[in-house]
Amino acid sequence: MLIEKIILISRSEKEVKLDHLYQPYSSVRNTVFAKNGMVATSQPLAAQAGLSILRKGGNAIDAAIATAAALTVVEPTSNGIGGDAFALVWTNGKLHGLNASGPSPKSISIDEIKARGHETMPTHGVIPITVPGAPAAWVELSKKFGKLPLQEVLEPAIRYAEDGYPLTPILGKYWMSSFKRFKEIFRGEEYQPWFDTFAPNGNAPLIGDIWRSPGHAATLQSIVESDGESFYRGELAEKIANFIQKYDGFLSKEDLADFKAEWVEPISTHYRGYDVWEIPPNGQGLVALMALNIARGFDFTEKETVETYHKQIEAMKLAFTDGKAFITDQRHMKLETEHLLSEEYARTRRELIENMALVPDPYKPPSGGTVYLAAADQEGNMVSFIQSNYMGFGSGIVIPGTGIALQNRGHDFSLDPEHSNALQPGKKTYHTIIPGFLTKDNQAVGPFGVMGGYMQPQGHFQVVMNTVDFHLNPQAALDAPRWQWIEGKKIVVEANFPNHLVQALIRLGHQIEIAPDTGGFGRGQIIWRNPETGVLMGGTESRTDGSIAAW
Image (cartoon, rainbow, N blue to C red; front, side, top):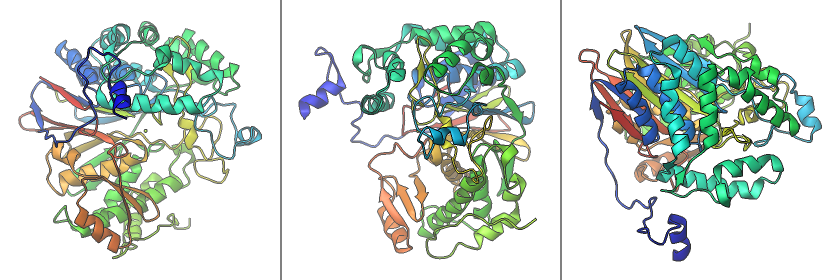
């Protein structure tokens, strides 16, 4: 067993044999302060990429684009060029929202999927692939708000792809996990390009190994030179569509050519003097706002009490149950977002919360696995940005020679035609990735986010309450032990969650499970700004390779 462990750590006999995932001692991080600019994200090299752009005279939007593009290279276990993106941008005293999530192909249908023998949407392969939106997000943000040319902004990402970089610990952990799983489940030849790209020479790179991808570099360069046209209407689009069609998928050149990222009006709720902002549906940020509205009716005086956790959990499970029932493409919502954010809705759901855990039913209306980054500059511009391939590497489909790993976002569609999120041609699915933003008295407090599938609105809810109700600094707000509602009365908590509170919650009817590691509890970043001095203060995720670059 020891020999096997050492082999997994390093392939070189000359290296000192260190286990970079073995951490027997608690590590304390403090809030990072800076004046001129700050980038917080889950991978140190990506944060440095964004900072380099700030130091060249770029603004926070340029830095966010640079960081996002770099993340597709230096953290491909969570996002890629073939994924989706959302952004909240604060500039000139106004908050702007960008929805760069792609729709389902126009040729897809529930009947066609069922005719192929599927009762639910497949997880991997060509079927769940939707139009990727991330490249369009970079181009759109650059055109509307950027200061530097896109070529200069994407240069760090291109350089990392060409020259290579060493894998960080958490990155290496999830890369190896995916490789082992994919070796077992991927049998068709359509998956071979994934192994060619991400497991060269038949092995996944290990922690500290150098990995490079010329295909990524060439694709990013093509996006730069064509202002994204190559990806949606040119050579890259041709390669994507031809490969998908070869393996009987649905995504076509027409689907790619018709896509455009959408500027949207952010939605918000007022919570104890602050305004909390999210992207409107199809994103699930609405769930966080609904939960905050329910919680707003209670007084929370202390954080570490059973009453606090019980009410938080009950508010979240009610909001999430309703979110899953109603959230989908805005054009297909059966219930208006405004009603779900109303005090009438919040009061109706709040009244169900009693002294024991409940199993919620969906609200009855009145008749009638992602990367997150935050960036800020000295001019007051701030960006909350998130992008993802969904479920780690996504669909498992990589377009040969390009480094483009395509998302499997279509997996979230329902094949029940009566469901709000039922699969339809050209429809955007319920989307898990959500950026958050906080303002007070019409001034920016700053961007925040917690990535991680269905943990995301739960992470937003907990981080906001940690900040507003319990006055925790950005780093402490992220470091605090997290809980996650799964279904029914089932709650999973982190191993450092206080045991006496676990026991008390069990007595209230909650079914508590203690997770062996922190992987399922999301990875967050926060940057707050002092409106009087302009000083930036940031917190980064201790559950991953999180880093803050600042000057």
